[in-house]
Amino acid sequence: MDGAEEDPFVTLWESVAASLTGGKKKCHCRVVDTVFFQYDISSGRSLPHRWIFTSKSGMISKKKKENTTFEKISERFNEFALSNPNNRDGLVAIVEGWGDGAQRRVLNQAEFGELLASAT
Picture (tube, rainbow, N blue to C red):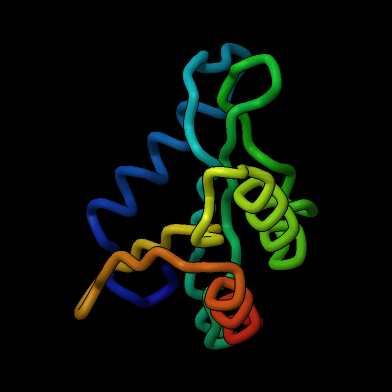
């Protein structure tokens, strides 16, 4: 995290994500799309760092770096969540923070859009 204190939970998740998506053998299990952000000290912003998901074949995979963008994240999360007719509240993402004052927030489309816009 370039000068910032590492959170052990985030470090663990990052290593799990790397293990699940690296190498020749893929892990066959279902996970929700998960995007890890990393603080970039030079820009003072948190940027998308790694995105893992379950492929159509049921394997855990990761998006290529060039596809791990705010725009692609917004498109995927909104399209996937809002296509579910049981999602009456229009919820699209769960955001888990870390560090001081960390909290979990469940966001609707507008809130998620505002969060991503504030990070760009």
